[in-house]
Image (cartoon, rainbow, N blue to C red; front, top):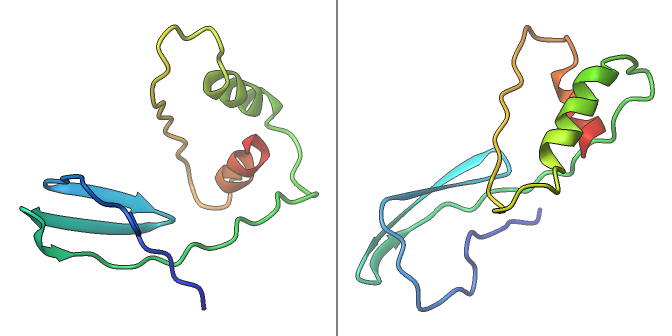
Length: 99
């Protein structure tokens, strides 16, 4: 099983009270002048392919693609989008279609 390390091989930086989220794993790094550093390794899973049986939701998918690929932004910044709903309504498939 392959294991991934957060910031593996990195040097000459300071991280204070940070939370790094990597592939559904939350890793806390506590740093005190380059001492007492603790971290947990996360497993990076493969992303599944979108289902060929998933249809519809073209309006939502179009809005998401437009939102995340908007080239008109003068300042490139991280974008967030909350997609929520009951289980089984296609949230994961919508996201997979956008990637």
